[in-house]
Image (cartoon, rainbow, N blue to C red):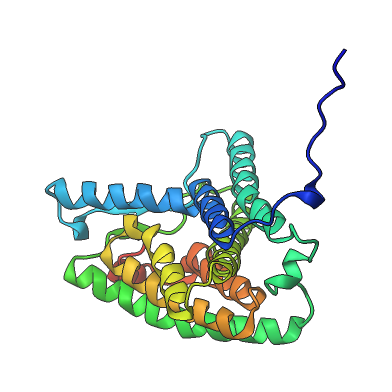
Length: 270
């Protein structure tokens, strides 16, 4: 009787070549993006092509964010919470992969609470830096016809509407800043990409999955991506970016209701 075959000793295995290591990282990146925002970018690209070729000007088209999924409030709440929870799975995957060498992923990308006051201050500052010009770009885009009308929150009114919108804002921030900035930039750096290429790639990815809103939001989010990616390259912290992104989305999802109706109509916001 032949003895059972044994696995080769990993200690004696030949070292992995640099080319093989980079190939493996590249495949990993495609998998992570294919499960998250890369997939969203592809769909958004198809969507903008459909919008541009359907015969209706972009200025006369609209899109809705945070839509209701059921006319029954508690079933709608269930769907909303499930959607938020599953959207965070790629965040968990990215952090898990970044911690493969035993190092804490949250510390590696600066998602920890080591500097709470400074992170809050920087986050609010970045939100102001991006938010005000972004609103202006949206208005200009609507005026010149390259941006669709965006309905920021289409949820049915319920006791849980505002809490769910706040959770949705936080979910968007974590997903985008962890995957598009922290994870992607760390992995591209390991592949020996140059800093300008890493920053531009991160920014273009951010812009890609906003294409469904029109050309204006694509440009605005690329600019935002350049600022955020460059900040991360210099500081290696995503927490201020998560704060800034959350603030921006909270203002867009909840704060719009505080704007007078006449102003919202003039800005093309419902």
